[in-house]
Image (cartoon, rainbow, N blue to C red; front, top):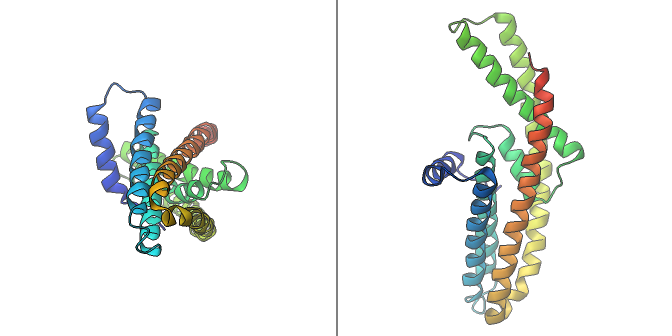
Length: 224
């Protein structure tokens, strides 16, 4: 749900980095959050002015577009932490953050397992390159078995996290209905709400990414 175009966003991120080579990761993250939060705020503001004609259409446009912008922001922030478009963690990570799940307990462990598998895959690839592309059948079978569990884990987790995203989606819908009734005051309220929501999502995303950095640095030390 709200699946961003990972490769398109990576291209956008790379262009941004090219223009801002001297920025630290913290500065990059702040710019990403501010830009996407501004986009969400404008969506809320503009859709409120047509709310008096019909509530449902502008309401849905507001929620869908602002949530999509938040999902894109999560991917861009992940790229700032070194993630790649094909990283197995991105989809699950995005769903947990959009559902306002804290980086702890079972959710954190699930994403960590996906991250360990990704790190192991990269190590194995470098190992094959180091020996001129030669592969050992036993090693291939081992890797195959290692990746079965994370892949299944990701599929099983997606349904649960999408459900949480839908709950947040419905809660956001109820909160925005009144802003579409009173389209002048509501436009400014919706602007503020969308801006606040996006920045809150961005802060949670940074908590997740920082926590994963700490946990994965420790866990991947055991990969041989």
